Length: 291
Length: 299
Image (cartoon, rainbow over all chains, first blue to last red; front, side):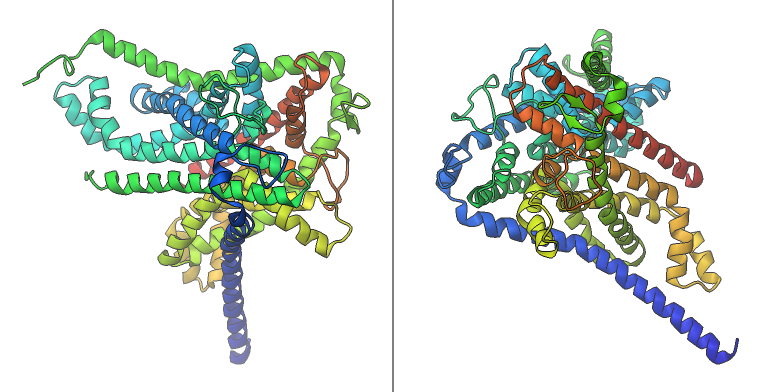
């Protein structure tokens, strides 16, 4: 190879390398673009239809009269109950796996099982909810049955997040506690859990925001898109924001698509509020702890 | 000085708490058992009336009108949508992961990471809405033969839904490739492209495959976006412009009607659910096997 050929060869390779960098950048730009288009479309379609009466009125055959009062109330019920069920069970499981269970086959099995549950499609949980809560336990299509189903959906997420937070607490804290004569539970309750709380709460809030947006399990267990009252007890029939969005989006009339977009704006607002809380918790309480 | 009962150790309480925590852990085991038992029992009832062979090899799915229970059309719909989403999510996802791990500055990563988190947190039904209102009309303007509901629009949105997952999982493994491998390649005169494509990606390939498998499993189980966009026409076709029906969309369709419990149509949900559960479980376990291989290599 002459000097000139060699130079050309190296230039070509350098150029190719730079071209590849541009391709990678373009791929990443696609992700950002998708998010921008998505938010733009929804705001553009939905905002003009969003007003106070939309939040306070009931579903209707007429798009201009349709509202989300029952769906919004149901979603708030579901958030409350799902958090109530999933936090103690999820954190309890995490504490068991991280602080109590010995490294054994059994622990490995439980861990593997949780990883697998995290990958089960949410609609399968809906089928389980239908067979177990709605039929076998005869809870009917109640808020309680819906919240229990969503609890099963988010439980793996809560457990994995809580485990990670517990693991981040240094062993020295536990050793110091044991050295002072504390029992295992005293160590967990007075030292480890308080130190892990910001991380656990962040994980819980993210899990709850996942639950808020889930429609598949609720539809599978028979949540209604059209109810004409605001549910006031866990035994009441229910709806949910993503369920009414699904119903409206699946109708052929374009007006209902606008109504669906308006409901999506409300749903995304709820999600943003939840995530802002998570960021706040991470920032506010994460600072206090210094190892 | 220790005061009060709160901090005095009590053996029975300690043991009780240990048992209670074990009970919490049992919930997740029982969930798996519950899913398995329920699906198998109800599906067994179904297979008493419909032969397994007909279910797995029949080419027509029409439970209501003609009592034909061949799952192949639903399977074909699922594969068509999943395959289409893979065409979008896998290349874009891998290239983005490479960009974030090998090229992006810290400040760019600080912007992109939250964007991906937000994208990952957007509910499935919102993507379904986008498929109907934005993607499907766009496809129809390019291909006038496409139906209002078509597999392509479902593929596009499902692809974007699983994209953040492909990126974050692949980026983690690509980043965990030891620095020394890259430096050795540079020392031999390789360009950045050579290092990335011939050294880093091959070294991380097990983890990347695991990320792809998990994304496919997510796409197969994806429900609301597909139920909205792909339509409800079970048929065997490879044409993405046609309306199809996936396994998940079928379950939604039956759940929406008031199908009385105990009927054959009601039990189809469980038979299809079982097929869905087995498929995704298989992919997840395969992915975990690949992840374990990465761990063996570098940890």
